[in-house]
Image 1 (cartoon, rainbow, N blue to C red):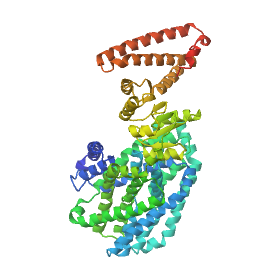
Image 2: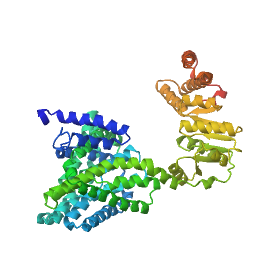
Image 3: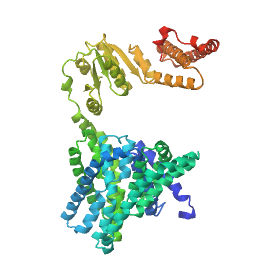
Length: 611
């Protein structure tokens, strides 16, 4: 390593990541752009703290391999089979369509068709690493757009071998033409080896390793599995990521799935960061200085050409409006596989060194642009698309007559709604998230789009004649605004509110709301009961102790509410209440020890009030 010290390179990498990534996240640019910027800064084109970025990129690409293995673990074979049509249908359309668009642009500007086709194939590929990392960061993996992006990424990995076989043929390399069939047979053999070996050998082998009861060896086995499948696929010219993905799919139904995920996750995150840093290091800044117009033209052709086709695809695929920008942006960028295609094109004489450098720079810049484009989409494009896709306000313009209004229909409001509907009560449901409204209507819920903190919307929802308002919105400020409107303009309306925490509880009390439930209180009490039972208490004893705690807590909270703005009084009352509770529960435990279990339990009247 540099300066004769093997610690130099990892030290520089870690320092660059630790400084750049938090700064990028603070600026709301995303961690990927932080890694890329760190790579550019420490690379040979800037400070030159680390050299040989190509070698580091080969090692760092293992992060992509680990990520694809984890993606495979989430997809059972039956589910993957169900995705075969989008993979080979939409995936093929993306790859062939984008190649055709970019090739047409290249021919229009007079480039020879052979190098133009090689370059177009490389540019048509998208970055699996960036796409899946963004989907995971935003929790979009299970959305329509997320599944579509995954389908296209899988097709691109499958298409790796024909693309790599085609480039030497385009350069008129005779041996590549004669051995193409042999390469295809080797690739098919490798895939069959992974599938059959995974079915017959992997589970017994992992069971035998797990029986050794040595966690670090199981972790080593997990990494060995991914390395072996990746190496096998690389040996036959296929994508390493595709091999790891297949291994993951084969283990998706095994009992070791969660253990494998837990063991590999830390390595994946670290190596993915290393991969993005290495990509940034590989950016040739001299090309940007010497041929800025060429690089800018390639970047514009890449993003605009692919973007237009992907927009048309998103429409044909009937993706929700609010998901289309993510789908287009994540697939319009270039990809890490393009670097391999350009390098092979240079080695075969199909591309010149300057052309290869310009193409690599365009792809690297497209990767750097992706987080910025997502940020622009979040701030300016998505709000407009959401407004377009919103259920029109006219759907609730007629006065509603339901006796109950539910404001907010997320995880909390839905439970309340299901309980009411199951018992024959109807409710007018208001939800301010347009995407959630669309999803809920698919499941048969009659949900109206609207912000319940608007007085006119509350009137239209029937607040003047309704009996109960269930205040289940997640945002504290919005919750308080709705409560204030209800208490001021609809005094007959009984408000049953959800409180995020004690502070929220006190503020609702200040507004005159008395029927308040803290959202995690009862769930936490149930967990505490389970712990007491595991420690040896009888279930009925644990239930009564939890009930005593609940009643005392609510009484104490009501006593403290008038003083919640006086911190000194509040602290003193909290300490006193805690001491009283400890004494009371000590007496309960002593009574439990003196009486047999059948005599122990809350009175009949208490059962209905217990948790």
